[in-house]
Length: 83
Image (cartoon, rainbow, N blue to C red):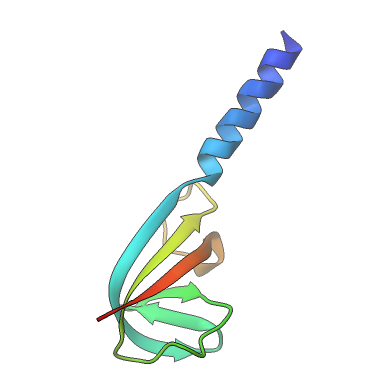
């Protein structure tokens, strides 16, 4: 019974952590490791390829269950520059 509970807990944790989401929009500001997509900030490790005015699609993972926009709660997986 204990093994079943542990396995169930691990499955639930993996499902919660794979909460991948996307945001598409224009970069309105780049400042201090933050990229603002239509005024929504995201922490980005490398901003060297990004410019204000570019349209992008950002894939990220929300690491919390809270329903707010806190850039500390997101892990950016991919940034695609749209034409």
